[in-house]
Length: 121
Image (tube, rainbow, N blue to C red; front, side):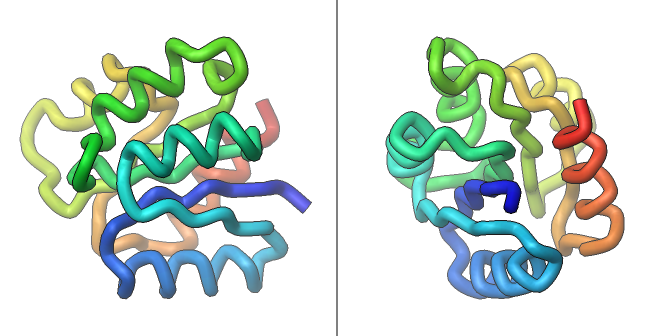
């Protein structure tokens, strides 16, 4: 069962997305801010990380940079999630080290396709 770390500060988003992914057969790890996300990723080494870009303590941009700089976590695929999709955000997310990018509100089938694609690589 693939292990996915969901780094999301919104309880509503966290609950909905984790429930959906569990039903699809994924084990879900949760973190509520960027610092906790980096710590959980280093400790648990998930198969994939979904990270909100607007996080408290350490934003998703910086958390992703730290993950991609770490020897244990650099190979973990990261999908950035954001509700504030602005011009250039996708490019910025990819430059920060994200492997893909998706906007909120989440379209579950589209996100699932991206997850499955990255896990096959």
